[in-house]
Image 1 (spheres, rainbow, N blue to C red):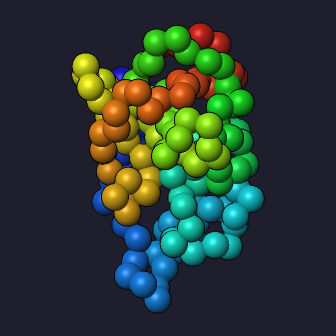
Image 2: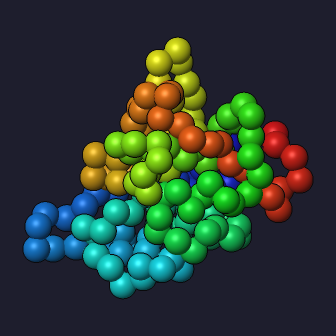
Length: 145
């Protein structure tokens, strides 16, 4: 059984950015409740998607569209579990740039995440394990399954 927010995320599979000059209102809706509400689907939306999924499950997110804002949210996990938030860096571990999604599984080389703005849509995608900065779990849920 998945955590409820992961079921919400799976139900959004295939939601994709609209062509240039248009905006997908579903993605615009993901931004509601974050500091970029009202932005179109061309703004980075991985964090907005995670925030929106948690909101649907009654869990308060960071309120920020910055992927790295999740580094200070919830409780740190030393070992990932399905549905936990995975925070990754982009370009440089010290930069402000990042990516965030829900952990599904890993192998020796990659972590597999379900998230938004992964190749322009809600989908599963893989990332090098070395880019993971943290795994986080909602504090309000006592313990990890």
